Length: 210
Image 1 (spheres, one colour):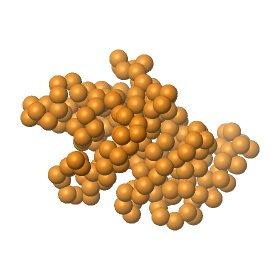
Image 2 (tube, helix red, strand yellow):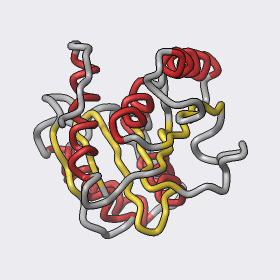
Image 3 (spheres, rainbow, N blue to C red):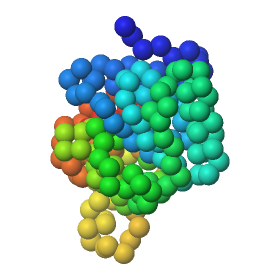
Image 4 (cartoon, rainbow, N blue to C red):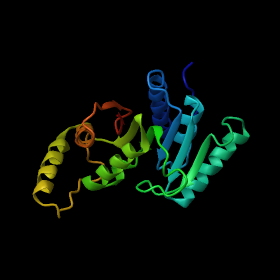
């Protein structure tokens, strides 16, 4: 049976594609526990928990986002869509978890649409490194990012890395949303050196899976 998501706008269509991708991966790499970093409204966390039938910890640094996410999750529980405590929402810092989940490890670490908002390569790198810290030894990382469809900025990434090695005091910045798919592939390989799968969700967004 294929997963079903009802809403039809572009955001929900992207989530549907993410869930379909995870559904297909779940056969070879079962997912029992997930942390969704920067959960926002909690919609992705809810859909992962419902379709994959796993437990999800949803984290956001915004009190308003956490309130909205918790209301969405509570409503899903009341309607019998989710089990009680299947999805837990935490007000926390993605760079340094301080709540009771700080020592947990997860089969999947997801982070949708957050990495694009960081201008500096250092901040992007720090976020990805933290995501790998939160996964189990055989766990996976899923990132979605706004990416242009050309590769013009991939070379800029290489040049920036070379510049940084010459001067550690220089802060390297890439204009927001100007990164390409190749840019992120290079970024992930620099951090982990592992095989990176990617799938374009639409003309703006790309899914990366490590």
